Length: 208
Image (cartoon, rainbow, N blue to C red; front, top):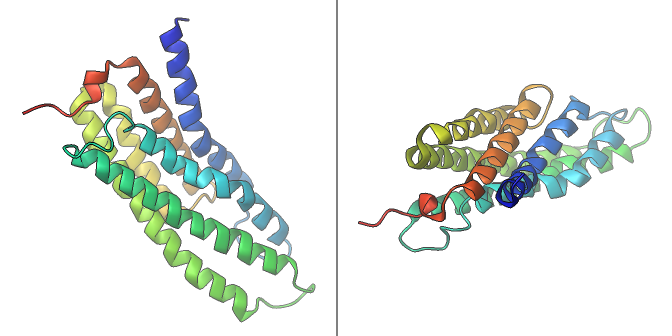
């Protein structure tokens, strides 16, 4: 294997890893938060606090050669949308995942869910929805941009879109949301590897 292929493989694996790891975590994600699932609920979201933002970082890394150029609005929009996802979706993970789960795990056996836990979900859910919409925007932009630039070679970028939609609809619950996050991870990994193998001019903004 040549040095360039080794580098491409390394970049691809690193870019895919957060999404794929979250897909695996989704297999173990409880379907609902109860006194019996609370411990697994909140402990599963602790590593998620790192993994969820890294999905956005991986998408941003696809534009590292094009941002922050003033004449490349697509790169700016992708970076802003991916950053929005990383920030707002991580709020969902911390609040509704770690916060609500930890509080529930500390309740006495048989106790009903208190209003405080419902209040955590009430703020975590809307913040997460903003984040998932940002992910959809980033996915659509990347897909349109790289298919236009690479043609057939950029076709796997289209997988970002259904992946992001599944995450928006079903978080990382198994199977839909988890498989959606896996699609985002694998597509990002392919694109990251393809970027290393492509000449730099293939990713630059065409001059007028």
